[in-house]
Amino acid sequence: MSKLQLTLEQKIGQMVMCGFATTEVNDNIRSLIKEYHVGGIIYFRRNVESKEQVSALSHQLQEISREQTNIPLFISIDQEGGMVARIDWDDITLIPGNMTIGATRSAEHAYQAAHICGEELLRLGINMNFAPSLDVNNNPENPVIGVRSYSERPDLVAELGTAQIRGLQEANVAATAKHFPGHGDTAVDSHHGLAAVPHDEERLVAVELAPFVQAIREGVDCIMTAHVIFPAFEPNAIPATLSYNVLTKLLRQRLGYHGLIVTDCLEMHAISKEVGVAEGAVRAVEAGADILLVSHTYEEQVASIQALCEAVRSGRIAESRIDESIDRIITLKNKRHMGENSEVAADFFAYLGTPESKASVDQMFEDSTTLVKDDAGALPLDRSAKTLVIWPQVRTRSEVDDLIVQEYTLASALEPHMQHVEILRINNDPEPFEVNEILANTEGYSQIVVLTYNPVSKLHQGQVDVVNALLARSSIRVVVASTRNDLNQFPDAPTYLCCYENRPAAMKALGNVLLGITEPKGKLPVTISEQYSFGHSASFCNK
Image (cartoon, rainbow, N blue to C red):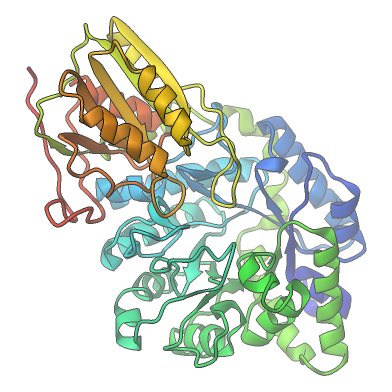
């Protein structure tokens, strides 16, 4: 593999990573590989259907690429774990999300989860993971990070993040630390607009940058940029992705990073609505990016490649600048033996979702479930009582939430141990008339467990109204458990738990705590109120 053997068009193609819309190779992605020489693919939930299908798809994509060049493809995915997992079938091991791991305080759990994830991804032909998120969750109203962060403490984020980087890379999957210089203290989702972090340099170095500094020392393969403005580093109102001051002067020169810089998707509105996708691609390369992520639209992908070629031909970008990125790309593909990875798929059946890996994950969730308080003495649950589980589910897809119909719920975890358990599935954003219907359907139960679920910055008012109305009833036992970004919503509820996600293993662990089978072991990784600060945990005694 040598850049000397590549045409300009092939070099530019190596720098662009594209997504497509189907579970099979379609005309668009075939064209991008064969005609435009793209060097990277990103999978979303729309591309993954089964282990057999993903393995075959990865192999076919590599074969198409191999017909054009001897440089293998990056095949990437956002498999952070928890609520951000493009693959979540029962026959793989779905690892915990970052905040779940943060609640365990265990670097060993972090490493083991990432290593399991990496081994399974590689057997599906996926050689790059856009994880871990090293954002420090110091803004409880952040609409896009939330439980994707390990903690509000930069030292804990750094410790657990570097452990996950080791786990992925020792499984021979390229890890990606994101979102540099830090997306944790923003009030705007960059999918929809341009956010800013206005702190001074001293604060940014101590908090936002600290985990990335550790990741660089760990030898992280890739760092993903944030479409966020940092006035302390960039005096002009442009996001980090497009800033030479941030990507080259800060990340390359000051922090000494020599790995790959990959942009977050350039179709996000913070770029596409401000400068346009194709112009954003050119400016990102000028700033210092190596890989341009254009995830969705074929026309934008082609336009970005063409704009980059024209920028070099016109002299706007020197070809030597392109060569620097090509060197880094080829170096990483060689380092991770990516040309060999498409062949491992044949034996993946024996290694995906093993009892051992799932048992390891179950232990992680047991160690994470956090009891904030049980002032009402509602725990353990009365196993003979008529019990209702209220389960909010997403019914509208968004940039931060996939439509997931989850069959295994908390009710599934409780049913084997209780005489009478029913489930009430509700919209996670119920309208006032729906709230009234929900409350009417709760009559006749002496014990209610309400799960709350929030994919954005604040819990939807309908869920708040349901919880408050139930807590006002003196005749029933009510337990409230948060399952995503709603950790600070009900610290005054008499019995309140945090479990950071609603995936099956998390619900199994929560059920065991509610029933008194296991003690709650997790510690709050973030402060949810003055009374319940970072590190808080409570316990209860069996009745």
